[in-house]
Image: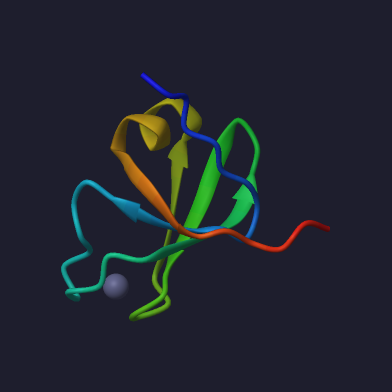
Amino acid sequence: MEAKTYKLNDVVEMKKQHPCGTNAWKIIRLGADIRIKCTGCQHSVLIPRREFEKKLKKVLIEAPEQ
Ligand SMILES: [Zn+2]
């Protein structure tokens, strides 16, 4: 299975959508914990990297290289 790659400012789809009905999250902080922000309602959550990788479905929009 291909390893998932993601980086800061990517917009990702998770296995479970946010209760607001949106399933597009922007990665706004990358560290041991990852903060993602719902692009629908701007709600943000902080989750451990391992959990994030488990819940990540795919990258929707790749952020441009910095
Ligand atoms: Zn939301």
